[in-house]
Amino acid sequence: MPTEGVYIRPSGQKTFIPLENNPEVFTSLVHDLGVSPDLGFYDVYSLDDADLLSLVPRPVLALIFITPAQMYFAVREEDKTVVSPTQLTYDKSGDEEPVIWFQQTIGHSCGLMALLHSVANGEARGFVQKESFLDGLLNEATPLKPVERAALLYNNEELEKKHMKAARTGSSHPPGANEDNHFHFISFVKGKDGHLWELEGATDGPVDRGLMQEGDDVLSEGALSQAIRKFLAAGNGNPNFSIVALAKKPAE
Image (cartoon, rainbow, N blue to C red; front, side, top):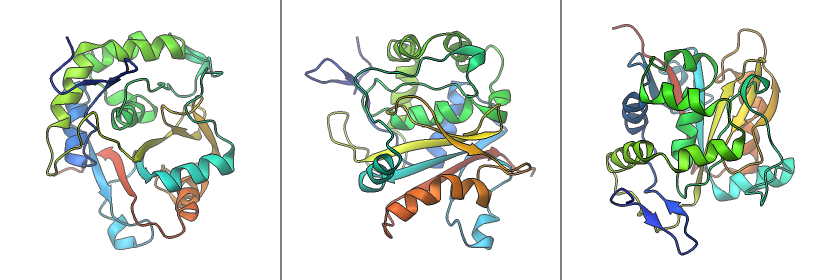
């Protein structure tokens, strides 16, 4: 029996209520999943204003970029990145992956996928508490091939409940699971190979944005130029995007 609010489309696809784009909602959900309370999400109000950038704790372990469809598809077309492939060609798993990647098969779960990609990779993975729900999920998912890994998420009732609980929080009225959602959530992380990786469940695997400069985090200008600024350039001034950073909470 699906969790209350989950919608089953005529095609049979399970569809969630989308997460509100809100760092408090994101933080609450990842803590509920099993991430240490030492980590949290923070709004990035500007990429160019030094004073506003200084409000974000550093180093930033992951960025979530929320992009409108026009900006999203412009970059996908420019890069020749396949979206929603009928059959995956990406087939890596386990130690051969510099990042763990999840294919999205649940409707309106792009926010959840971005959160999972952000906390499951790079330095953030070390903040997943041992024997937590998320620790068990990642340990089970890591050796699986992408299709089996996606099925693991799709069929996980506890993950569904935790997502739907978070989707009902926030300050705005979230769209229903049966309503259209025109925004895409993309996670950017530093992989085990030192490269900047773009992670989104609708593509044919993770997208390698190139080697990061030594000492840079994902909010450094070098990393921004490798990825997010490409989306902004394609947006031709479209202001309807937002960026959220994952970082360690500053000492009080």
